[in-house]
Amino acid sequence: MIETQLFNALNIATIPLNDRAYIFDNKIILADNLDEETIPHDLTTDPTMLPFLTSPYPFKIQFSIIELCLAGSMRVRLNLSEYELHRNTWMIVTPGSIGQCLEVSADCRIVIIALSNDYIITEDNSEGALVVRKFLSQQPLLELSDAQAAEILAIYRAMRDKLRRPDFRFKHDILKGYLQVLYGEICQLMAPLVEQQDARQGSRKKRIFDRFLEELRQHSTSQRSVGFYADRLCLTPKYLSQVVYAVSGRHAGDWIRDYVILEAKALLKSGQYTVQQVSDLLNFANQSFFGVYFKKAVGCSPTAYREQK
Image (cartoon, rainbow, N blue to C red; front, side, top):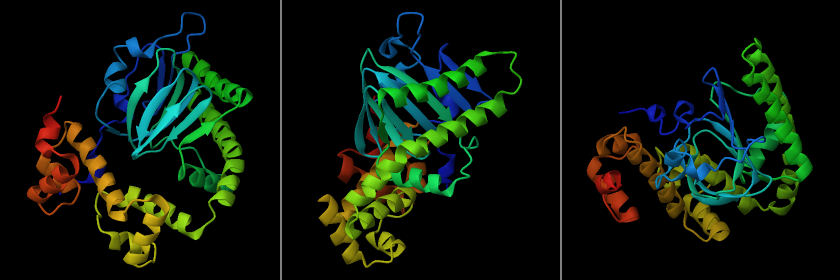
């Protein structure tokens, strides 16, 4: 049996880099296409970015990403949902997410901060940590005002300026400090929105559905039965199914299947595994059963999907 954590469809070392990216210790990457002193750089014509921006297949992302869109637009799919980044949109992607860039405008101006899993921001404030977790369980996007976006951009530029200096000896310490400031800003921006969410989505059924999706995101590679998730939530399978359908209009089994298939597609297109290995990774009884499950959902066999160009 292959361990799931070996899968590295997109880790921090495989991020496409160009001369506008700054990397420190292979753990943090700062990148942008602002080029304040020249003509803004068009991402859609950058050969280093094209494989990432135009890939028809999803990536399993094994690190944290913070993206701030300052102009133009970018459309992405993240964990089955589609989102559009536009002016002053801030997106946070957590490790383990499955994402795909669907479209990017020629005038898109974006700032990216990528953090490896071992470059963690310390969560000294339990209240702030709870706020961030509750917000990200609902959505990955924050809409900022011009002033808020300018403040985040100022923190980014301060970090970037330190990385640019070859004579600056204490980059690790100062980057940690700036990241803590950034984390504090995240908590401050999310707190009132979380309070609004709690007031707007306070029904017990909605809370159950949200918890179901969180459990599904964590366990979909190994568990495909409604009963497993019902047990995790201390509910009967019948009641969980009723709640999921009442809130989303879709059956719990449909949600489970979509998460499994999304993971299967990312694994197959990573180029690192055979169909048999993907079947093992997703804990199917055998390759034949996996093939039937996949073809029923996608319309073609895992092998045919893997070989599609």
